[in-house]
Image (cartoon, rainbow, N blue to C red; front, side, top):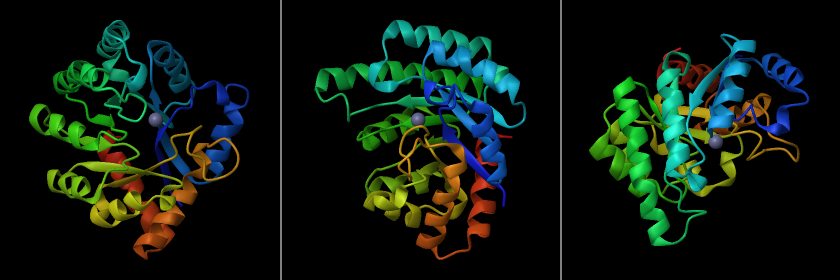
Length: 250
Ligand SMILES: [Zn+2]
């Protein structure tokens, strides 16, 4: 079965002692590739080394940790993305976070930084991967008015009316491996056409098991989606892997 992990954080310290074994387990589980998302300038540099070590298997999407982003760090990450744009497959995750940032000043302060990354993705003609935790509506509004290109709402957990807007816009979403524990995500899986849905682990986070989440666990997401949509796991694997290849232009 050909599976694909569309969003993970393989450069994190959780994987530094046994990365080779994690990658081997992913291959053994049927993965044909994964996109790892760097979230800072340090993470960006580590990820360059990792993608060199696993060519044509690990791809790099470059963004930032949205809730902790400063102007200075955004500038550094933007410089790196510009310099290495040929080596990355998407800008992101970038976006808005209302889960960790609760005050309205802090929330609106994120918008100009998000806009810079939107502009960058437009300039470089790269697809954009969006973090929109609890901020799905505002992130959607900003993208609708500022971006034209392929959008992936990563780990999407917005309400059905935003899922419908995403479907109307022809954008993509990813569902995490444990998505069938969340009501909004189950309804999104039904609202979005299957050719717009990708699977991700977001490892080491959001584990469907009691252990650290890793790319091999994408099979749990595939099984969950096949149950929700009443399709075979084979059909879900083929569709979601094709969607990932199309979105990231692999
Ligand atoms: Zn992530």
